[in-house]
Amino acid sequence: MKLDLLVMTVHPDDAELGAGGVIAKYVAEGKMVGIIDLTQGELGTRGTAETRAQEAAKAARILGVAVRENLKLRDGFFQNDESNQLEVVKAIRKYQPEIVITNALDDRHPDHGRASKLVNDAIFIAGLRRVETAVDGVDQEAFRPRLQLQLIQDKYIRPDILVDITDYWDIKERSVLAYTTQFNVQADDTEPQTYISNPDFMASTRARAHELGRSIQVKYAEGFTARRLLGVQDIFTLI
Image (cartoon, helix red, strand yellow):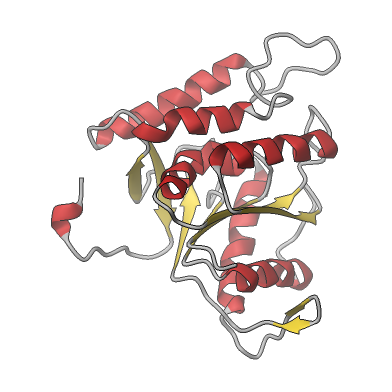
């Protein structure tokens, strides 16, 4: 299956929080969109790897993505090394996406920046024909996506591009709230509140999207950074 867009992020829920609106937008427009989670989020304070997998599957159905996989790298301890790079290379070659979106270049959570660098390096390696990989005994061809973008996550980073997600905010929000162990928890006697489980976190997420949207005169937007300069065919299509 060839994808148009692949969101490849480290924790289940990163894709929804940072790019849920863009995912929903391009699914609605008929693009083939997928999500690959690098880890199971097994070190999270709340929930388990099993409950997170169930929540991720529900979020994927809400967004309507064509595929969602989990590479099961070690949450918190994965490294940008050869073995992990090759796992990401296999996924990139398997789905041959035109565009990859990954984690923020630098962020409050150390996994985010490390995952961003891992995916960046794997994208380059995936295009090297002398790096040989196979899936289910079938040799893969070299492939390199034409564009990589990074999320804007907890730490505010000035975006290089903003995408209007006004018509898809409700879908994004529902996909995030599918993670019932992680977000918008009013009270829980068995597990502690966390930075993201407090209902104020979702309010701040909406406020961030609204703030980015105001920059381009729309209600809600998601922002992304690029590691290279971006060009357009027609400046009259810009907002």
